[in-house]
Image (cartoon, rainbow, N blue to C red; front, top):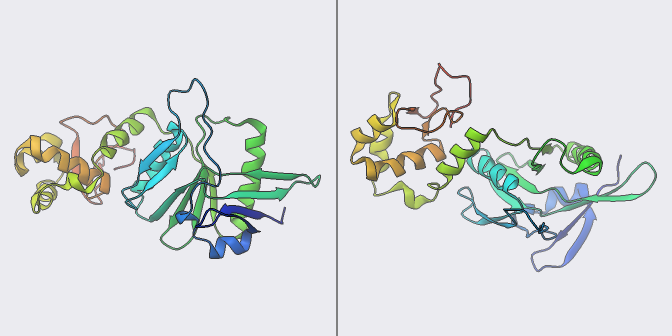
Length: 249
């Protein structure tokens, strides 16, 4: 399968169609608005909105709760430098010569200059056969230029809930007064229960938001596959609880 084309809006809002390989090398998709609006589905509890990215300090368009959760994950990844929602539509012809198109929900630029295009299905079969065929095509288009395409699997409920909680403290204002964050990090130089470390750093009411901020940004670590509670072990950057098999925050 070849002949991929990219459709996007330029910085002044004009529609541009360009050969995919050329656009991928020259266009900063991370700075572009959505090429088409996210659909509004009647009856859904969560519709299109904006996610404030701690990585970029800007809002990213999000079309569903599933996408918002995946934005949280990518916003915490150290090698992700920019994020955008639906900035490009891909066009191609199938084996019968019919024109097909797809707009991946997410674009993430990585520190090495490559990128991830992704969709965020609410469940494994979401989108049906059309989505599966589009996924194959978009994956090939990305592989051709050294990028990656993924259908990102929904998160476990506990992990998603923990990330949503920590995300509430992602903004720089949650770092608190100068010097307090250093005291918080110092309090967890050796792994210890959350409430013990918070109490060692100062008044827990003031300190706990700083702990959550540090956990979001990876300055502190814990097992995010376990529900957050006051006795949960928190450790320094790079620490992993040897008693757990799940990933650390």
